[in-house]
Length: 206
Image 1 (cartoon, rainbow, N blue to C red):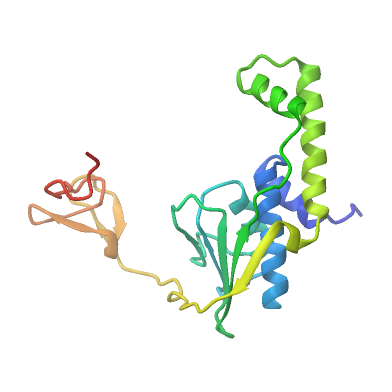
Image 2: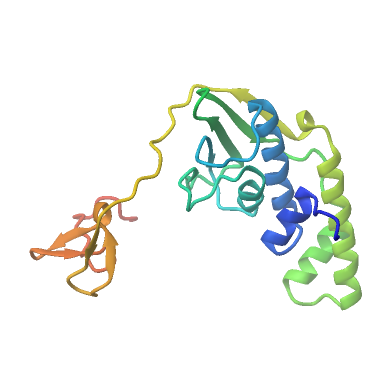
């Protein structure tokens, strides 16, 4: 029988490649599960609130079982490497902040990254870059959690569990939409893309 994949290998397979962002999500998940004394989520007892849409979120889904479709992965577009995890039955929650790396990448690493981004790197240079990246990732994965993360318990009010809503039909495009997301336009049910947004300028950028 084939050997069972490690959790890290499962995260890489799900995400499609190994990268530092994925490693961040992996360590964040490790810390959260340890602090909460929890295993991988089965039915929304564990909740994850992520404040960015980086590669880290894929590792969090694999490691914790919190997913967008299940309703217990909550995305907030704050652009912060900050994550909150909560156990619904116990009412316990932790907030985790990723520490900024103390050491800068080597000049060679930075040079190769720029060459790759410009499409100027040779196949050999791309291999060297991948090897250097793998070293950085392995070093990050092996460091003590307290060196790479800050974590503290917080008060947290969990959201309601996911609900199943009635479906209505958009009178404009004919596609179905969940009732709480429907709008009324000229007396007809409309989905959000078909509804005309009226704001009088509020919320618009200058």
